[in-house]
Picture 1 (cartoon, helix red, strand yellow):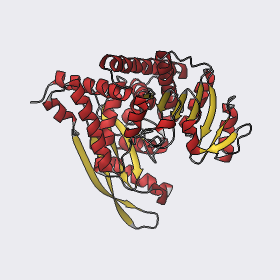
Picture 2 (cartoon, rainbow, N blue to C red):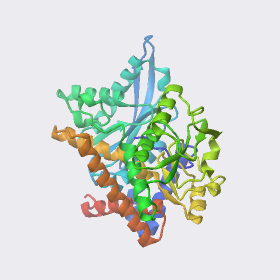
Picture 3 (cartoon, helix red, strand yellow):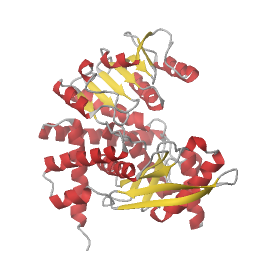
Picture 4 (cartoon, rainbow, N blue to C red):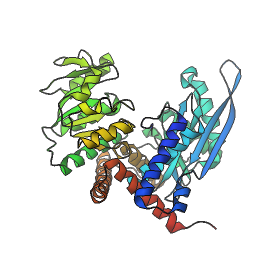
Length: 423
């Protein structure tokens, strides 16, 4: 569950920023000072240092982390990432964000996060497996279907989750499929993983459009970021009759006011690994996509792409943060002043969180759902979340990002209050 954040330039900045978002929500909610202090820090933090034998026989010692932010709504869930600069502040921030995201979509989980400080590109497949299995062993006392369920994040994927699940299962002497999520389908993974994040984002866009009287069919959409999620979302939008008028990858952009054939664009991107040169489109600078005349601007690329420098040029009525941290905080203020609706990343990317919960439920029951059932339940949950956020935004006269935080924080605070403080 990849989660970066808006405008943060270091792990310490990220942690400070995430705490600041909590502080603002707590003030709007009139949260009790004691409760505010409880929610502002993680429940537990584990730092481990462990050796890995490399293919040439030499041994390196790596540092890893696992943090649980809050467990009052259920076991924790959160990603494991392999990145060179990982530190404890970054993991703390990600764990807190996962708490809010789960609460927002009413998933009965708390937030966790973890990872290893390593450049995985320097490791062979065998070395990655050794590192993964040893790290899983070191943090194993925290992990389990009823306590903490890891998921994929930056530089980890279904194979990493398979290794972790197998390691935990070997220690217990039996297969524990529900101990991780994001596994391959053959060993307890779930259908619908490819489309979950994009489908959740699509439901958010549809709900926002409906709330402002914008007919989605025939509307014009520009998509900045044409990777896996951007492609799948483009398919969802095209299926709803939307006209995709511009696409951008990490280098270039193309446009066609009459509409771009999404299937052809996806095939072209997969064949050329670039959107430039797409037939029946006009080339343009990547930065120009933000100023294109459209109804919906989808941010599915890198974080911090919309700043106070280019926010004033945006013509879209809706900006959807389908990549985490698509807009900088200063840009939020510019867009709010211009009446542009921003669908915040905390809900626009929550489809993956929901699907992770579905995988856990299916593994716990040893009963698996069809893709149609998964899609129907995902739609129901995302629609409800957008309804709750919209109602709070209207009642409190705040933007959707502030409303989302208020909804999430209040739910975690309510659960903590009801359970009480032990002893």
